[in-house]
Amino acid sequence: MRVGLIQLNSGDDPTKNLSQAKAFIADAAGQGATLITTPEVTNIVSTSRAHQNSVLRHESEDETLKSLLAQAAELSIWLLIGSLALKTNDPDGRFANRSFLINPQGEITARYDKIHMFDVAVSETETYRESAGYRPGESATLATTPFAKIGMTICYDMRFPHLYRHLAQQGASILTAPAAFSPITGAAHWHTLLRARAIETGAFVLAPAQTGQHEISTGKPRETYGHSLVVDPWGQVLLDGQTDTGAHVVDLDLSCVQTARNRIPALTHDRDYRKPIL
Image 1 (cartoon, rainbow, N blue to C red):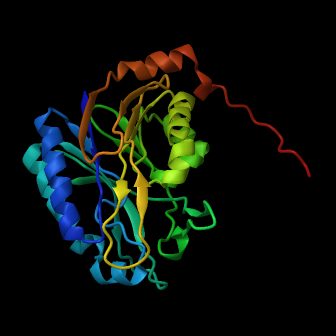
Image 2: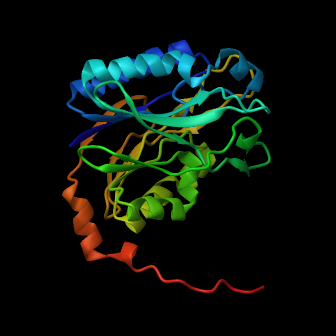
């Protein structure tokens, strides 16, 4: 099957971001991709909670979601929206970082809210506290399609290998990891983490990414690493989108999943053990 990874440079204007995303999705479909994926926060990259609060909508009212549902039906494709920033009804006003899998009829078949929040100090000048603006999800998501079971994750989740192992043990042969990765951690860890998750699970990993310096009208500037990746179940990088925006396509041989798992059946070799006592 042919998959498409959309590499975006989203700013803080959801309408402008939607236009860019739809153009690249149409390009990928025109190249024959039947599963197309977009990055984390496809609809907005913003460091201003006030600005987010003014332009974001609840899922039922979000124009990006409505438009991409219609486009998936028009193009008759499976579409993974890496994630959208959405308002919630939480009393503290925090947003959801939510991924959607859409079928060729334009219907939502699965949702996943990012579980692990990016609360880190990458350097003295680059710190993040995602949990201040976003509420963490509580459930893993495994989506069933006619071609494969898909385990849905988002960005920082990739540092928690047990999530990917559980998804693979439940039958996932494709794992999605859309991201808006920091350039510093990207250069150090991006390729290694994604290759490790593929090798450990014997699954394909699809990681569409945000890239470049983002156009932001208010708040702290933001830059992301790019390098949308497809990694096969043996850990080989099949596609690296480098740092340009656009549609990147590659063919997957899904039989490689069972081949890799037969060669090294580590998913069946779990053993209980006592944790060390301090």
